[in-house]
Length: 113
Length: 115
Image 1 (cartoon, rainbow over the protein chains, first blue to last red):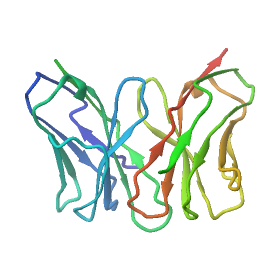
Image 2 (image 1 turned 90 degrees about the vertical axis):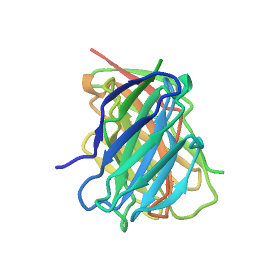
Image 3 (image 1 turned 135 degrees about the horizontal axis):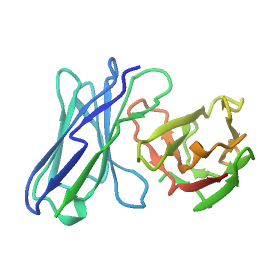
Image 4 (image 1 turned 60 degrees about the vertical axis):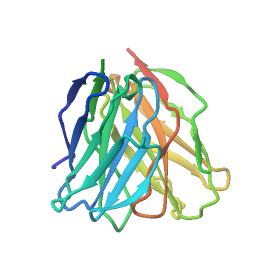
């Protein structure tokens, strides 16, 4: 079965640079979620999109923005990167209706030097 | 605010034995969902089992089962016949009944299965 695809899998950036993370949800899933997981921590919700509209917002810094496109893929844009942004970034997707089960992608490991 | 608590930071079990991981949560919602996710060393987040709050019957998936006590707000995970591949961090998560609700995670329990 198709899973959530994230790219790139690893990313190394310098402080103050920008980064773009991409997420391709499971086919026919209309909702995308972004989570950030620091070392030794649980995932923290950043933002979600349903049918290309922002549906919920968590602890996402103002330096970050995201959107969902017409083909339902989503991009997380991160600017003015800080050392503390180094983390594993997960994208998850779900289908509306029924049990709202979120399926996670493999994550993008971002390292800020 | 909703909270999820996992009181066991680390646990270990012998291969083929049974282990139970604890999870409690706090919510004023009546319609919600509970999940257990497994995160092995690869860091992939893998869905283990899910439970709808409106269902009284405990969910079961092969060697994994839950004990859902709604009144006590408790949601424990039982792993039977533990295997070395079960070694992972296990996260309990809560989601309210809306289809776009984000997951709220506990801090996780690191499970080690010993040969």
